[in-house]
Picture 1 (tube, rainbow, N blue to C red):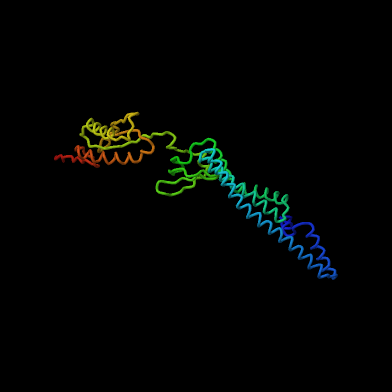
Picture 2: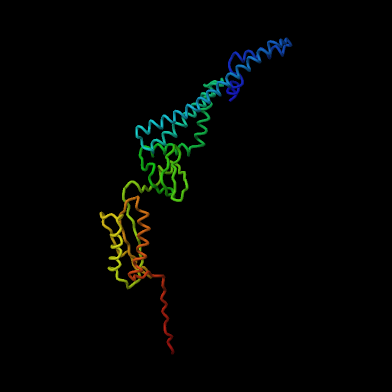
Length: 303
């Protein structure tokens, strides 16, 4: 650290020699003010030159990084690289270029890059130990990129959150929920946890659980449910819809209807069939039960 501060204060060896010479002249009393002023001006000009050069390099580098990111994005799009891979590569390349720009700017300031690199390496080890979780997330991102359990646009359920994958970055995967929230989930948790991907298979099975009163004709209920499912064009014929008597509860008989639909039609079909079941059952006179409790009172036996 001391070496780094000395390198920042003194731009090069010639500037250091001039400052030392001026200090000796002041200490010995052999003051040659013209020479001292010239040396200070020379040192200031050297320092200003380094600062100006660093500022120019930073400005050029900033716009160069934006241009390179644009070129990389266009290249990946022309190669028709999957959006999942594109977002990860763009995030990774952007961070690497920013680090290189910082190192170049520090070098332009006259800092010894060898000492700076050693300090940066030591600092990197300390930061790496402190941020081991982020390194795990980075490794998790690499695993997800190669194994590809999901891609951008898929509907996921993971870590207690369900939503559409918006982007896969080097540390996080961004999900957009159905109510418009963006959730950032660490890649390390996703790579080692359970993921439910609803887009891997193009079709999805929908289920409707209906309770009817005891005494209702189960075959008539099955026929009505099959008519409702068969009339909806979104219901797939293969596999065919099914209706079962699922269970007999305390106050009702439970009937389960199952049918397959495409992923894009799942929610609209689920809600529409719910409404049709309610309306059709009322029209057919099929009663929905409500909780009941039958109390039997024993007769009092007289002696």
